[in-house]
Amino acid sequence: MTESPDEDRIDSRAEQLPEEEQAGGADDPHAQAEAILEESDERTDDPERTRRESTQTPDNPPSQADLADEVD
Image 1 (cartoon, rainbow, N blue to C red):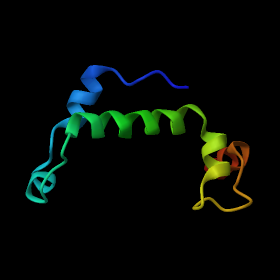
Image 2 (image 1 turned 180 degrees about the vertical axis):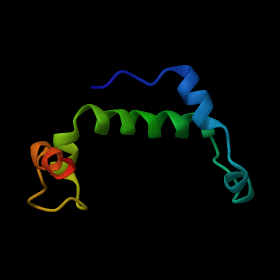
Image 3 (image 1 turned 90 degrees about the horizontal axis):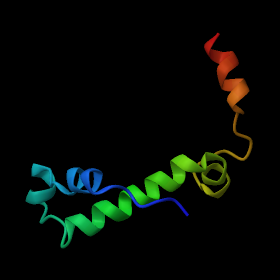
Image 4 (image 1 turned 30 degrees about the vertical axis):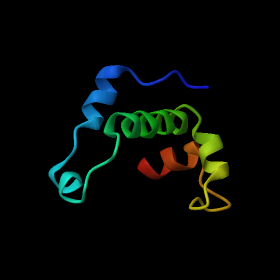
């Protein structure tokens, strides 16, 4: 499993935006930030698994090589 996000990243993400505070904020912004960052890190570390498990990804997504060819 992915290593836990460092405290600086968690503390930074735990800061509530004005919109979040106005909406009532999180009960535990630090725990929420940690969970969000852990999930984000897992998706970043294993993009192929993320693509396979996603319900938003097309069944036949372009490969990285296909995407690189589009840029050329």
